[in-house]
Length: 113
Image 1 (cartoon, rainbow, N blue to C red):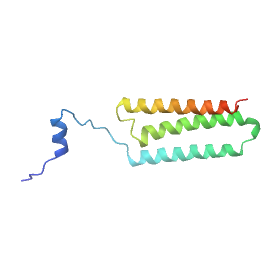
Image 2 (cartoon, one colour; image 1 turned 90 degrees about the horizontal axis):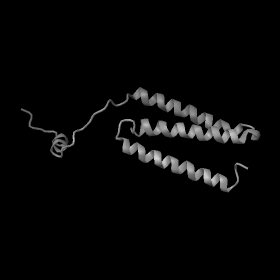
Image 3 (cartoon, rainbow, N blue to C red; image 1 turned 135 degrees about the horizontal axis):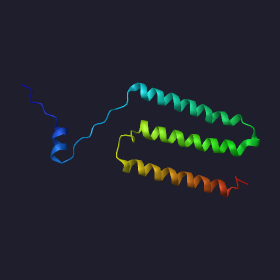
Image 4 (spheres, rainbow, N blue to C red; image 1 turned 90 degrees about the vertical axis):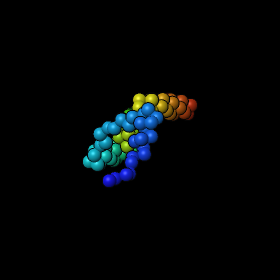
């Protein structure tokens, strides 16, 4: 007779919280996401060789690629796709503040002359 018990499940039931399981992504999903992130990083580094005449375009592309990478990492590697929406909201607010501060810094140095 097995007398071992799952104390974490008992504690969860005693506190009134039920563990809500979700389908965890497979290893192949993480590999695909990592490959996509590597491709996006290669695109970001390729902007170094773009002509200076399209500097504003390259900055726009870099900001868009940064946003895509941010959300991919946020949703898949940090598992926020499966967590409570309040955690996602905290990261979204942080993203808006970070991009806002970056834009203010660029405008301070008259980047968008």
